Image (cartoon, rainbow, N blue to C red; front, top):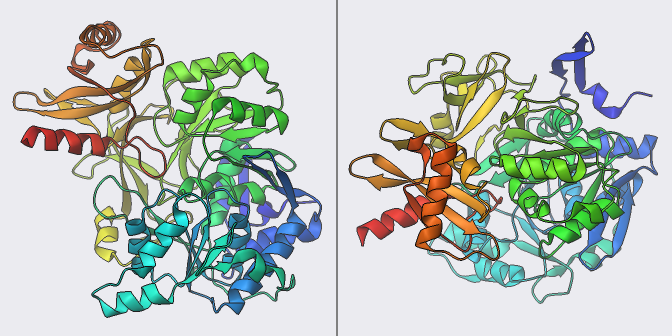
Length: 561
């Protein structure tokens, strides 16, 4: 029997190698109905979701359970007045209600706005107003509820904003909270039957507010066709398969959650592992991988940095077959230690909140050292210079996604909410500008350099932050580092390294000199950090990436004093 994804994902092979993929997008495609509910009909008892709380409580959901429970959730939302086109904000951490809510929102044709639990009251307020949020579903933990209350209760001087804030329907998951509709109570009496609601593939389906390195966050708009492009993410990058168990470490508010915790994995009929932890401990994650027999695993480089500090011999990781990472450069030392610990090579990938996976090392491929892989067959990519000309092989350029006769390919965003000027700024002359820099070899392997703004221009050299960080991180005293440019009157910018030390090491001028000499011996002289600052932690964006822009901003402010 054919798998459900084959209806939408047409592969071409030559000599056993994938040569092309054509996507077919029905005009009324809706992931919740056409994938989850269809799998529920054909394979009702197949496991869709394995949820484990930080207390160790395990809940398993079949595809049929997801169909029935998402129907109940959809009926609950409809009963509260939520309809097609309405915007629903979700702050649910890793609670299983997130998946029920996402499917339900898709089924009624509303727009889901997943948000990190780390958002402040002002962040929530800004998003509610910008997206004209109709309902907000949150978990009653930490400061989330109080932030929601503060966000919507403070009056605005703009009447239309006041009307929006005052009319938000607030639902709470977990312990009851005054002023909020109790999710469980509202859900309990609803029917498990639901007639298919009308939606179009071109309708808005998801808004992801990007954390951004500067300025106000902007909402990336994805339509109902977006999940189809994630089949490639799950099958070819993660290596997910029917009956397998996949774990992506990501908060449900991150776009990475869409990459690894719902769409592509369910398309290929893999189960999703969810670990609802409050605080990350490497030994707990390794224990989970062993106990639950996770087959495919994806995590940001920071997670791997902690994992490789543990003794892998204590855990049976024989079920683990694939490991992937994205978001920032993976230190070579970390990759080597992980391979030594469990015999699996971590394969890299690249994409953005505005896109699905664009570049990766496919499952089953060896990959080239330090390369993030080759382009996905779903996209035409180019590397261009500042004038828009394609650069030669081996030369550094900006990664751009080519439009198809002026139309965005499936998987690429359709715009920024209420900000056409911003969209026109990044989508021009037939391409989407990622503002990420890379170079490519003759075989088509891409080598990531860094964000355009993160590239350090020092004494006429262009230096990617990872070029410095890879070497600095090899020093035995260094846990992690961030390389940035520090303004200089003579050199343009000096290379600066902000360094978090490992336990047992103390900051000192002698250690600074030792690290500098260490880098000089292993890299070109112009790459060594002329400035070193020891820090307790590195600033990060909501999705966990190192926020180099925040370091640069702090340095500029310090210079002005």
